[in-house]
Amino acid sequence: MSWLLVRLWRGRQVDPSSVWFGRKVFDGVLFPLLALILAVGVRRILQDEMPLAVFRIAVPVLVSLAVIRLTVKVLGAAFPASQTVRVVERTVSWVAWLGMVLWVTGVLPLLIDEMDRLTWKLGGSRVSLLSLVQGVLSAIVVLILSLSLSAAIESRLLKGATDNLSLRKIASNAIRAVLLACGLLVALSAAGIDLTALSVLGGAIGVGLGFGLQKLAANYVSGFVILAERSLRIGDLVRVDNFEGRITDINTRYTVLRAANGRESIVPNELLITQRVENASLADPDLMLSTVVQVGYGTDLATLMPDIVATVAAISRVLDTPRPQVFLTAFAADGLELTINFWVGDPENGQMNLRSEVNLALLSLFNRLGVEIPFPQRVVHAAPAA
Image 1 (spheres, rainbow, N blue to C red):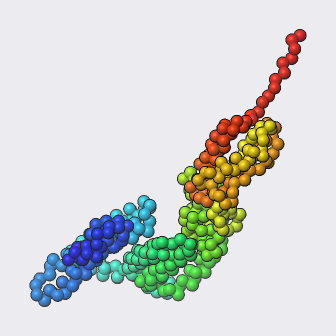
Image 2 (image 1 turned 90 degrees about the horizontal axis):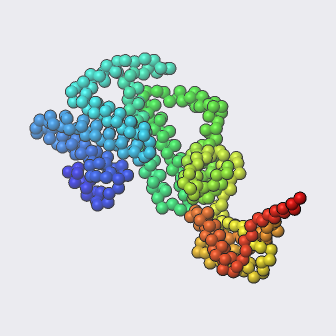
Image 3 (image 1 turned 90 degrees about the vertical axis):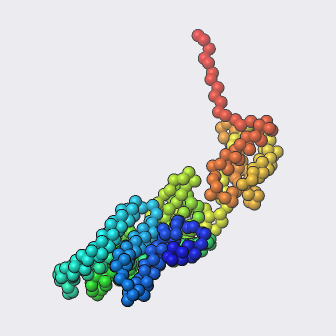
């Protein structure tokens, strides 16, 4: 019945990244949860009719399977590239199956009673080993649920976002931080720790932020400032510290820039606030490029310069408005130096390839018109023989 319900609910659309469904019908979290709910319901219905020994094994097995699936799916979705997640997955699997075996064999209730008897005084309250274990387990469960909920909210907020992507990103980061903070408070309360003691902890954290964590706190605050004021947006082409690239992600602590050659730079957010940043696409995505060429001193520039403008303007990626321009910028030692400026509307598709295409077009034009591109010449005077 659980397999059939999941199959009907999912339909024919397969989403491997889905936490609830997964790649196969029984691969997500929903299948063991539904099986557990159905098993508990059937046990309550049949508890007065027949022996229920099979359910004493089936229910703990389904609980362990649901815990493992939830942990694996949520951590895999939240940290897809982390190798530590694999270790955590195996650890949770071993702990869950061990707990199931102890419960079925009747050892777990005895172990719980012994852990409850081991107590010690922590501050003004008495804490038992059982309460600490319950707090750790509660923290893990709350962390997993918080990551799952924040990942779902983030994907929903960022889905189809274009112009307001930065605001949605800051909203998702704030929601994740709030959920994790609430989860931490719930875990501490489950462990039996008095939450009024957090006032002292808050003062200690404030001192730590003021001294040892000053840079880290500055980066986090700068990340929210960048996202809030939208001076830098995901997709902008920027230059920071002589590194030029497109912004691919803005996190709370750092920003990722990807250059045209595939290299990525991780820039602390404080650097983007305190230093000068060149943004080529803040108000206008159009970008001006230029190339320099020399022609001979005897060249008729009045005739050549309109031909150069027409040749460059005929290239598909060069914008018609503003129109390409040619300037006589210098009287060089070997010829007349011409600077050609042209505009491109898609710099993310490459700048070097467009400049090369313009240079090849100019070279073809000069060869067709017989225009000389001078090169340095040196005259050697030989001394007369004695």
